Length: 448
Image: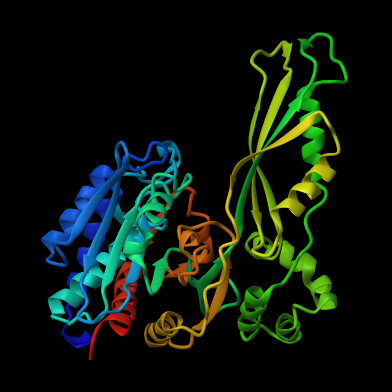
């Protein structure tokens, strides 16, 4: 089956219908409740004739995990393709269309998970469907994974699976979420990032203690005030900007679309003087700032239980993301030095070790580059260091090459819809994703 023999209008309609249905499973985490979605995916895989080798695990009550295998004709390690089924919460009152309605309107499927990452699951599913209906001979096995609990901890998801079944998976490459094509993000053209590394998760809880009392008689040992002063000191001392091998290569790729002298400066960003010259400009962009330094985000505050009572305890939860080469102990020493107050203690919520860097001189990276050249002529491909965490880290930490790649083209304002309001994906992007995924899987896994 060649491209010219594929009825892409039919494929597009299928992707939209499938995406819409998948969104309608409310897999908000917590609690997740991914089992109904997992069972639906199992039925899609078997009903479409993709494979009957499908196992649905239940790592915790109500948490479904799908592991499906397509056998290969040769004794090769598999390509593992993964997406997560769980999504973050959404307030329906703020959305144009209800977040779990799967509404199709204005050329888009609307709903939570359409960008993160049920879209990737649909793209993988339809790409495999096309290849199987084409009658291809898979020489390399393919493992299709759909996991729960990515948005919280992975304890009932990929972490559970890797700790118990890694030897049975043993992938040649892992294809997970992260990055993809962007228009207007780094200049006017389209650029595709391939995530080869990601920052360390380093989430902390600050606890301030003070003297309780009546609100009518303020005093100087108020736990809330102590906590706020400590947080202010942290925010006023941002971590330094740093360029590593991955970000240096990324900025060299970005430089090709910039005007002089920015193009020259970006090519030499690892030079300390040039980094200082461009530092303010780069730090003003939240995405670039996150790629170039350890970050601290204050996201949760807890204090008090009555307006006229001074509480004896106040807490803040910080989502810190550390560059791959940052030493976690050094960061903790820096944080405590910023706090500079014995009344404030620091507890760890969750940490992850450095995840390593997937190689660029690799058949997977080359297959992505080839697919981009075919479906988005003129677009550049560059390695990316993810500011956030993905399930790919569980494999990189163990020496497996894991890549994050979304085979679609997003606009700058689409980034705000991820974990934001009015998340949506276009029918055009879903079809592009199927085309690119089909080509990448074919190049890596199908015999000639």
